[in-house]
Amino acid sequence: MSKFFTSSIGQKFFMSITGIFLMLFLVVHLSINSLLLVGDGKLFNIAANYMSSNFVMKIIEPILAIGFILHIIYAAYITLKNQMARPHKYKVANNSKASWASKNMFILGGLVFIFLVIHLANFFWKIKFGTVATISYGGEELHDVYGLVAGLFKGWWWYDAIYILGAIFLFLHLTHGFWSAFQTIGWDNDKWINRLKVISYIYAIIIAGGFALIPIYFLVKYVV
Image (cartoon, rainbow, N blue to C red):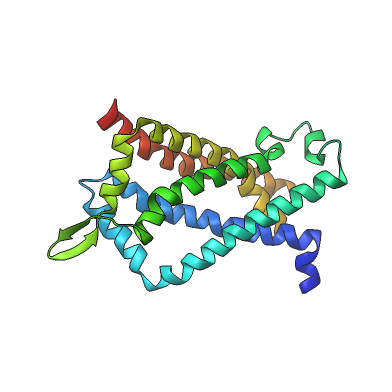
């Protein structure tokens, strides 16, 4: 078993599994964030506070962090290994049918990572370790996560632009990463690949479009 995870196939398999897990997390994360567009922020605050205090999430959170770190490490390792094996040009670049995203997954992944660091520094870190104002609902004191998020989107138009750009990078990364992950775990016949490529674009549009809609909403409503 240990040899499997050190082999090229095992590394790609593990990277696909962590990728699928992260894509499922994006669905949950977008579902919560979509509440930013509803009402005065009460629903979002309740949901965000529940997710941060929920016992299950306390278990999933470190697993998610480890999975993301390992996904990055394996992606970097596999990319560098392939470049060393083919110093002149990576194999996928010779495929005229390959999309731009598939040829530049490493670069797109790096850009998504930079965006994630910005996101964590401004939201996750402040919520977990900083001082976030509280708000009362029915006598219960909750962190005003909505105030933190909405305040940033309302106050800095260029931050909205960064998030929209991050969503575009995520879209490009997902259009290839989605179907590629399922291809690696065995769904690699012609019929399923064609279906998965269509689904990957639908998924990427929903996820990236949903995340981009949030800063656009605040930009149009409060900044422009």
